[in-house]
Image 1 (tube, helix red, strand yellow):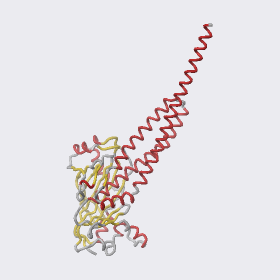
Image 2 (cartoon, rainbow, N blue to C red):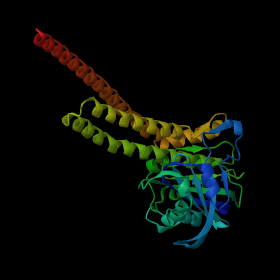
Image 3 (cartoon, rainbow, N blue to C red):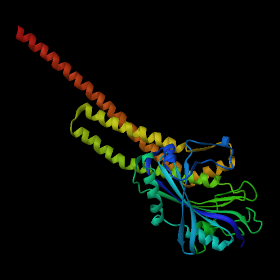
Image 4 (cartoon, helix red, strand yellow):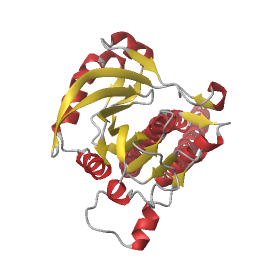
Length: 359
């Protein structure tokens, strides 16, 4: 097995922390240096960010791993649609392949690790005024990226996966997997040159990049952020639909008339407008146009993470709420028309009575 001469392992954890984040204000509030995300190896005209996320350098941490303590660089990245990514990156130098795979598996910290909360809490406290409607969502996403820049010998992309076993690193399993499971795990692999490689799985990725570009890792993070935000709105609408039905029935049972229906219709319209605005920002977080290779990796990540099915579920629930809003609006209009007709009848009756009393 070759020696990993240069590389790093990055553990990502993504949190939904607010309805939106004012990135300009966040940059001004932060005491740490920050910069907007820009893909280093891709021409600017080949990609388009809706609102480039803001990266902030945080103080380093010492990780107590099974293989021994490791110093980790810490980076936070803020997205305008309310997501914060924390990245813990451990550099690797002069590590044999088996030890490298062991380190990758040890970096799968899990959601219960207190390091995440200890890092996130002071960050959010310092950025408080930049957070619009801060949330306490329990939703989070984890992703692990193993990156190799250089081996101690010449290695081609074709030999990785055949001569170099990626399965323990990508699966986290110590027992040998079946041939079918191994083939499925290695199915999503991409290369542009003969000496680079990306292999994607649901919760991990392996990147071999001698030119040290970070574009693929950045794109994978954006895809995870889109998944997290779509999951948040999917759960939000799941909770909202039963509440909406209860409110519709309550409005009818209280016999509050057109005003009750109109008030509820306005509330639903505001919800639809708010969710639609944010989901459009999420959808447009990144557009890869001219870089075919990066576009393939990004599209594969969105498919693998099932971002589109979750987005379609959000759209279906929004359509139900829109239909309910339209029905409530029609019912309110009908109720107003009925009330006006009743008033006209009453006025006519009063006129008739007055005319009779005059006689």
